[in-house]
Length: 119
Image (cartoon, rainbow, N blue to C red; front, side):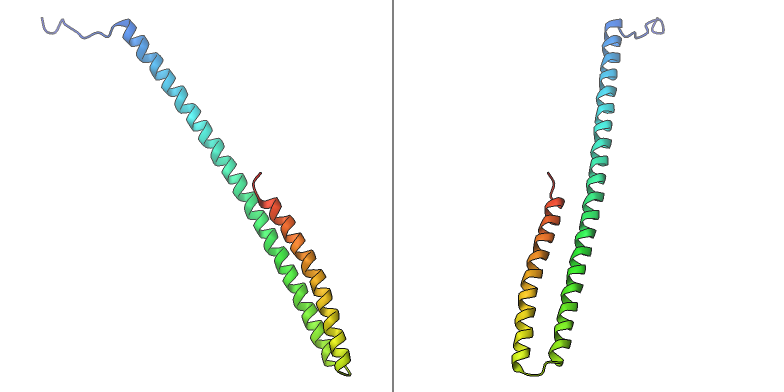
């Protein structure tokens, strides 16, 4: 007689279990979709940040190159100066020029940095 007694799950419990599994599957699918979206967004932001950082580095290098070229040009002109008065004039001209150049460069770097900040 023990073999005749089979365990049967009541229909209501089976239906409840199936609904619970469906809900769990839907929740898992939503979680996976949200995770994929988050990863995609992070990758896009990382690529954008990397590109902006590369541009900032290139901008800074071009400024450094321009500033060093101006310094070498000054040194070359100083070597050809005829007297102390001309040396002073060349230095004053260089300093004024560099102040204006550095101001422009700072504005350009600041504008580029503001593009890099998340909004």
